Image (cartoon, rainbow, N blue to C red; front, top):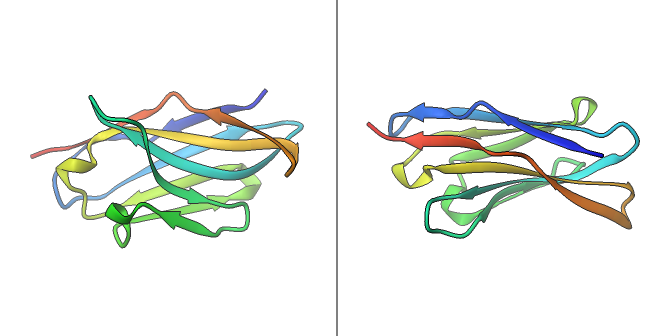
Length: 120
């Protein structure tokens, strides 16, 4: 089984910065792509950023230039550095990890989420 745990959420003022982390534990599986999603009340969960095992990244248009995702494969940990935060970034941020015994047998695992609130 793979466990995914997010941390680092909180309250920040508009224009501020915050970094959230996600650690995946997988004793017998390889962690492949990991992604950050977010969900606001009344809205569907949306993809914010995805990072491959090799470090390639893709971002939702609304966060490009403001958010940066990095990963440490030795720790199976990914980070999401969020700068120039806006009130509309307020959401529960979820981490998703693709893990499996091979790239052809990947299951998706979710964390419990961490709240990010951008407000003055």
